[in-house]
Length: 80
Image 1 (cartoon, rainbow, N blue to C red):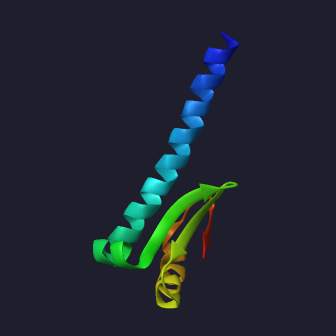
Image 2 (cartoon, rainbow, N blue to C red):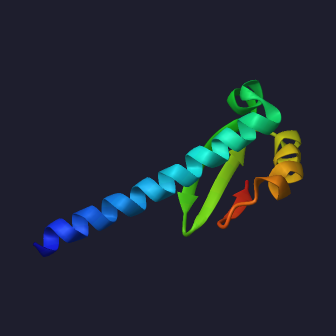
């Protein structure tokens, strides 16, 4: 019984994190376009209650920083 409850809770938290990453990705596509996402972003992942966005260039990092205030997430967004 305890194992089942732990499994269900862990599944919920993973889905929540994945949902946050997915919505962040959709917001970036909405502001900058799908082409920008494909060419300039290496990865978007979750680490220690933060969304980490890795970019290919300093220009992409600057663009993400400019729209970061418009994303309005409860979680912190860190750009590398």
